[in-house]
Image (cartoon, rainbow, N blue to C red; front, side, top):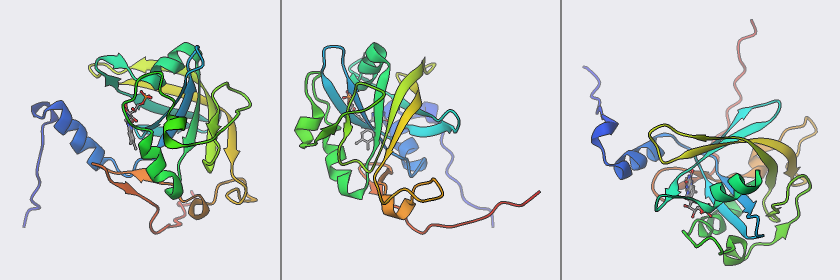
Length: 205
Ligand SMILES: Cc1cc2nc3c(=O)[nH]c(=O)nc-3n(C[C@H](O)[C@H](O)[C@H](O)COP(=O)(O)O)c2cc1C
């Protein structure tokens, strides 16, 4: 019997439904919990799950910022102004606190304060990192790219420092996934932690 398939033309969906469908399909998504500073010293922190790593050497990440009422969100505004940010990576323990920082607050609201989070100074960039984040990556933006036909803007960032909590870093120079226990975003208001970890070697050609 033929497999039954539901086929959807996204151009027939409202923006909201298209977004809701996409974020329920591309899962799980890592979460960049981005701290930035405005030129006036305003501190900002917000989560972004349209996020990934795109180059190993030099280490480079990308994330995508939407708009709020037709204006750039605070994170994009600060990066446009300063070119600097920190990608903090939340673990299971920080999941609820991370979501608290996603409120659509005014520019002058410091989400570190709202969520009761401590800062730790960075080394290579001005924005501080989240003190309790198990991993943080200091970054400088290298390209800010508007997406054709979309309100979103891509930010490509070069990592200038990794900060990894002791106990997560393995002698072979990588992070222990289980000990890290990252939280990832699914669709709706759903999140996930790591399930089974599979080790699968590639063919040696
Ligand atoms: C887990 C999570 C992931 C999110 N991912 C994105 C994203 O990839 N892009 C985006 O524009 N907004 C995303 N948001 C919403 C922003 O965090 C929210 O609009 C926030 O207020 C933006 O803050 P800012 O204006 O301080 O930058 C996400 C929210 C949550 C809770």
